[in-house]
Image (tube, rainbow, N blue to C red; front, top):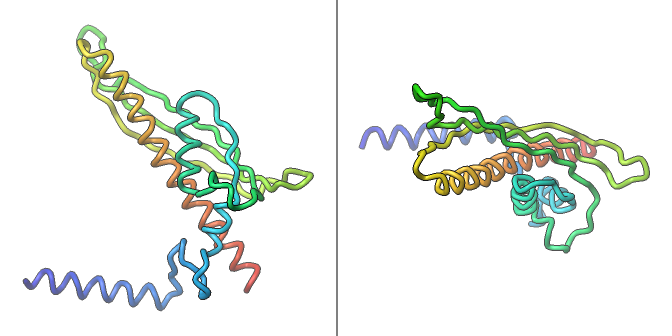
Length: 178
């Protein structure tokens, strides 16, 4: 009982302190109830085709985060993304067969305006690490697991990219108003 009361007090004190320093959620709506600058601008991003299967997974994850595939908002930006997943054996048996693979997903992006010069507005990157166990008698299962892991990495990296862009859009809106 005592620990739950102290946890509640800590949470209340933390939220009060954050509110006092100007903390606001990235996707916070405006006073009129419409989407905030991050949400509005993310919906105006077009993500061109990214090659290979992992690229398709990344594009789909980004479109899900942006809400830009609905066609309700005209595209004002293009997001150029490169995405790849590399693997390295970390669990090696005496006969040099890998039993665990570390997967490293990396994505870089540049946000470009749809103007005549294709101006680069911002750029950045994201990275994720994970691993997959490989069983020598279950090749098909291992192949499915690697593809599922690529999808999880694409989802995780898309969330990182969407958050970075939402923060950037919010900062740009604050510069214009203040």
